[in-house]
Structure formats: C-alpha cells, structure tokens
Image (cartoon, rainbow, N blue to C red; front, side):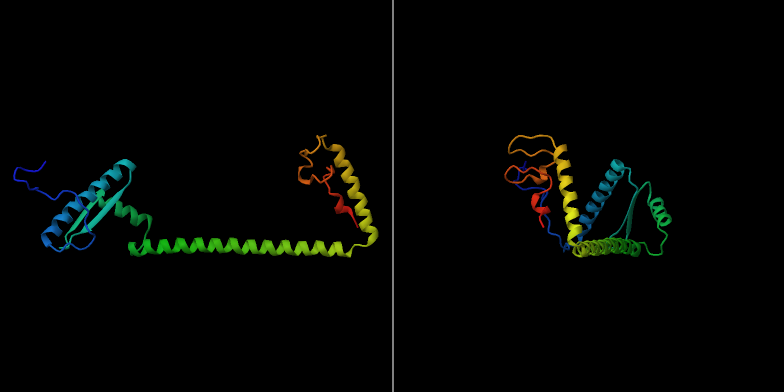
Length: 190
C-alpha cells in the first residue's frame, strides 16, 4: 500500500541494467547488499549439498571480504594440497584447456582406428573378389551344387507357412511367385 502522502518510500524490485552504477553511494550500498546475498546463497549451497565453499571478494575500496564453510583457510588448504600449483588461477584455466586437448586427442585416436579398420576391410574384400575371379568353371559348378544342396536342407528345416506369409527363417528372402527359399534362385545361375 502507498503511504498517505501518495509516494513510495522505496523503488521496490525492478530490473537493473548490468552496467557500472554511476552514483558512488548507490554503488557501495549495492555492493554490500549483493555481497550479503551471495554469501547467503553460498551458505544455502553448502548446507543443501554438504559442499565446502570459499568466497573472497574485494570491494571497490580494496577491502577483502571472505566467506567459507567450514572456513576459508580450510578450503584453500584443501585445494592447495589436492592441486599443488604455484598459481591456482592459471592451473584452473590450464586444466580446462588440457581436458579439451585430451578429449580432442581421444577423438582423433578413435578416428584413426576406424580408418585403419576400414582399410583392412577393403583389403579383405578385394582379396575375396580376386579369389572369385580366379575360380575356374568346374569349381564354380561344384560351388553351385553345394549351394543348391544347402538350399534344399534349409527348405526342409523351415516351418510351413501359409500362402503370402514368410516364415522366420526365410523372412529375409521371400521371393515372388511363392518361392520361399532362403537362397534366391538367381544367386545360383551361371
């Protein structure tokens, strides 16, 4: 409700542009309120998640404010012991870059491995083609007879199905005109 004189005492909550506040007094007040809000959020995070947190903030006047749970020194010492480095900020930046480089190297290794496998498969396939091209007519006829016998054996194993239906064994090879052989007849033509 508005006061009796019709004016508001405060401006209330409103959207603030993210730029430097020109008025120095307003800037100090905003810093103090935002700092307290940040420390409150850090407290909630540490309580809800059992996280160890340390926050160090320097005011525009170069005064240091800190918050830590359980305390700032404990968290910083734990960080230093876990990551013994001279410059923690440079370490964190370097870690992110190193992680990205490591992931990139892993992906490149996978790519090279797949390229090698592809070349091996192409070589095997070309070897099979060469074998088939080198076969003579007598060998090809013998292979045809063996494939026909195999087709007859598979046809005997196949359960009977109604007209127009494919059995599970011959599902991949149902051919036109009722030929339900698992091996298409045109495969065996010379």
